[in-house]
Length: 519
Image (cartoon, rainbow, N blue to C red; front, side, top):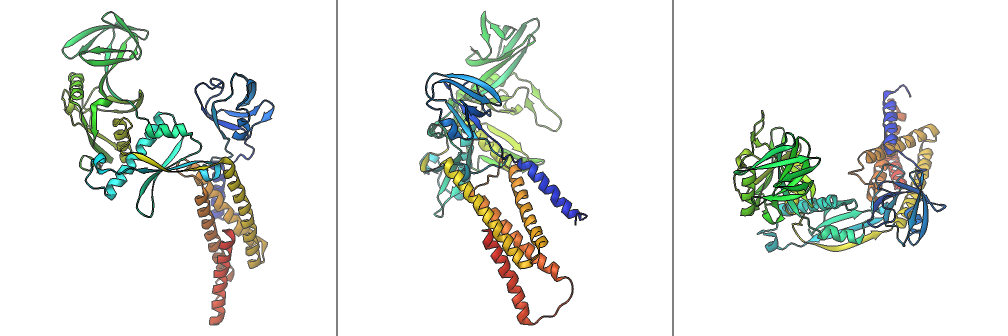
């Protein structure tokens, strides 16, 4: 048997799957998810640190650490294997933790506890500026809503959440949010917070002996820079300080002995009047080497003139096989956090367009569309394209999740025993029954290994476990048929019609009984 290459292929797959799962049943402690401002543990612990012991008490779950929420005095704790002392002056530790995972498999909130929200978009044709709400429009709107919520989550550092569009039998659309333990304040912030958008175009000035010339418009300005300080018109500016030239705000990004990098602010949230989402002005198309997106925006006349002034004297750059673009890029920020950077087409140089077009691309249609909706969300300052109403909040406690896990473990053991008994009674041979069960166990390990490899996209929840059980049950069915055919051999045998029907029904009922036992 071990000379068969297919057996070794199965062994390799199982070994790789076990490596991917990285099982660690002896994992102890809790992992830091977030340290809030004002926490007495601020500066002592950081995100992803592991706490295993506090004041002579072993910490194995968030509930164990919760016992010290009202504690005041000296706190002795083991963090990443090191003893640390913290003086707690008032009740409240100000940290969020989760149990250290025993594997790389990502479990759903049904099993580990959490919060599931169902949000319904308010579809007002006047506010949405559409004549008819079609199927294609709703698909686009759901993409925009989810992209905006994901952008807010990433920018504002909120707890990791999973977003997906869902639809009921009546055709109503919803946004479903799943999170392991976000607070009500975090959810409210996710739904209500709107950022401040800014767009900058850089201007680099070469410095010789700490001196250089900034050419802007029809004027030249002598600047001096050294050790992170810029001097202009006898005024000193440090990194991130701003000054105004010809009604344009500049920010000091960096100053070295040989170069000063300045950024001219060309657009703010007030300049972005409208972002077009309709298919007439916003679309993705196939091009050579990938996919390309394009959408249009409407900006204020003041913003357009500011852009024209800043780009009027930039150099044009043409590389082989690429379109002509300007020497400097435009950088997009939301709440002073960098989001993206775009090249500027030569055709926009010195032009005060109020309806410019944003272009970009991706290797696949999905990537291009996701990047387009993300940029559209940023240009809207993170504003939602439609109002969202909370229609359902479902909270599952970690304790209930652990009970689910225990129930599943008991059900798995009983199913294994039932399948083993049925298979053994069918063949009366321990080696055959063992081979079938070993193959089924290998299938489970390989599936879980794939789930661990794709843990960013695949969450094991109750529905997934039911699917795995069904798949394994079908696998046992197939093995029973294969085993019967193999044991029957290639010898031709003659049976009566009645005997053939009996044999066929025996295989069918045997397979069905195995599946029922597994489920």
